[in-house]
Image 1 (tube, helix red, strand yellow):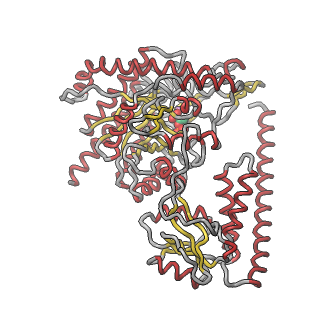
Image 2 (cartoon, protein in one colour):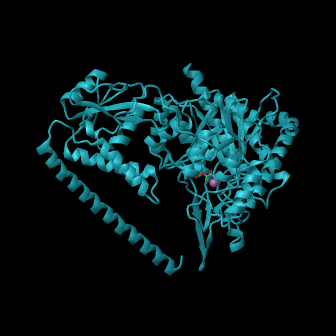
Image 3 (cartoon, protein in one colour):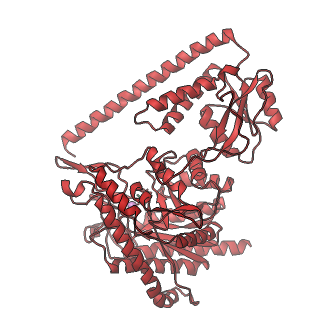
Length: 613
Ligand code: PEP
Ligand code: CO
């Protein structure tokens, strides 16, 4: 970094510090003003609670409409917190919750509404909760609407799940003119319809990692062409994958997912597809021999052409250009021409994906001939059926995904036909964001990358939104914390899914939390990767969760991008064949090392279970 750049950065950081000071000052002033109001209210009225639901919802509506950059979810979250603290400062106001079979969900909703400062107490029954609200400085949260007010006690708002379903009703001593519900609005007793979804509904949501195309008309033309194209994958095959993943969810199978970090146009050839196919097959054979159960094979291929970037620009010397975002967006060369996003690249990506899928189908039958050999190598004697190779990629480019979404009359559902499985990246998993919105409406299996910044509340809301019916085979949670972080984060999340009876699969991506820079090159240590996988298995065993699979960045070719493994690559070797355009991949030997480690963990697990039985 030049001196000028680091000076520029230091100034920007100083600006952030000044903004934080101002925010704090304003919060202090707001709390003081609300304390003054409370003192006056006290003098006038001691029959009612200090909470004013109607005013709160007016404030939120007004701010959401004013916000330029802040998403509605952010406004909601920050102001609910501030108002929650304000309320507690005016008068300690307790929330008394009636029993429910989803206590965590209810607590999450209550905290989202009243802020995390609120004291929560569980009542023995709905009647107890209502009684507390009648006599104390308390709000009752009850499972059924209170149809008639009793004395000062009124139902003043409905708490909703993230999909719009009402989950509980808030009742307290609130003045009639203060209740948030429209007086005339009929009380919905049955679950409300979830908000409408269409393949385009993501466009109304804030989107991270959005590509700035200089020519929107050219983009629209490309979208129209893609919309008119045939599906890349068959819906029947997607349904097949869902059924296979349902067996993973039930603990009867495991999944192995892997391939390039980013596919490249320049390096594409039939042999590369074959090598990836065979590598996944051999890894799967190792897992199958160890677990004795079915293995579901998923390649990161035929659509993995776009990358989220932590910085939208790259500066070399005194030139700043848009970052490279994958071949479907722009080119890797550091020139204006290459780095300018070009929508025609979406058509090239689509064409390459189509050829890749055809090749995979051809190899599936050709490799069937090799299968006995692959299986004999690992000591399996039975002759398996041809192995299905499913495709997967990150659903990052929503213009592309929307154009390839298809309605299927037979299932009466929407499907993404760009690949069998899509996943949502760790940088684009905002609950109210565009990527989650798109994914919730298609019926494919969907993956959700879960990194260290994911909070349990948001995590549960995301699961609710993406898999509202809790269907085995729909959702794959892909932990990617890093070897040194996984033990801090994963147990709580796994506990939450188990407690809520969630059927989502847990798998581990031991790549993206273990990237480091050695002598200017991004790399990963096989030791860290194996360590994260091992910890994943340990935590899964401790939490009583099925370790559903692994997700790797790898290539069948002989690259030198990761350090370690039985091939003993050292840091000095990195420069030799460092070919990736994005993240460092395991080479063939290293990928098999990791698969071997997973196989041993699966074998150990099978042995432990047999002993316990
Ligand atoms: C990826 O899988 O290539 C990726 C970018 O992962 P994550 O979203 O988990 O960082
Ligand atoms: Co990557």
